Length: 362
Picture 1: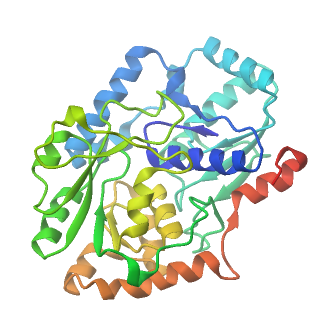
Picture 2 (picture 1 turned 30 degrees about the vertical axis):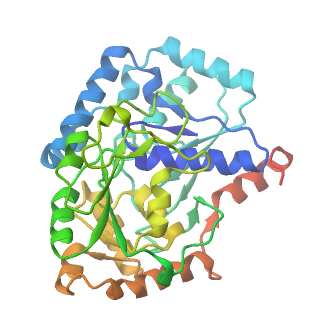
């Protein structure tokens, strides 16, 4: 699974696919492109993450102007990576970030034999990393978890084997977050929703954000010291109680999926910008999305698709309906039908295991 740490919305689906494949007996390895970068470039990325989190306008501009991190990877690092793949007997790579396409081209130019390549698009149109990378090789298999062209969900990656929580059993809390890097207007919307009488679970990325959270809000802190290039685990998340020393937070993370998904399963709605990973959470939890401002054109396409399929509403639309939870019930029911009906998306795990034959065992 070839991912990038600059977007948890593509990294976490890569982790999920690895988990689902391992459950079937396949060997799966997650590679994060940033692990191949020199330390100074990594520090720049970490600094950018902090800036983007604090200022959404800067994040939008930075997304358009960001350079391809793979260009900073030395040839020697790529050769060493290829040597390791050969030793592991890697037969296929699944590309979740377009940043990897340039690295694969460089390996091919060195006359090094590549594994079979599958490109997996998490967003409904090409994300910035894929647009920047240009077209994949002609013989590359391309699959999409969502498609604005066909207006449907061709493929999916199971987040969990547990069924969605029935609508009547949900605790009426809303899950509010800003994606993996905590970007967007979610904090302002959290204050508005709390003022309207809703109780919230809020994912924060800095301890001081918990202190300013609305009264009655449960603030879950994503470990500020963790980055996807540190390990292959899911993002650590911990409940930060009011007045508690952030240094004493006990971070937990799931072993088969990300902890924030458990919050999504119990929620009446997720309030977030429409990243590809958030769409996947919405589908598998059958939790409607209340869509905030997108961070780019690919997320705007995601928002339109989710609204057209009846899975989500724009924030302004729900506000005009008085923030009524029952207004969202038909979206929950539509998600249930989409995941279980005859036209449900094909499981990427099944597709890969069928193709690889005996390397995947039940």
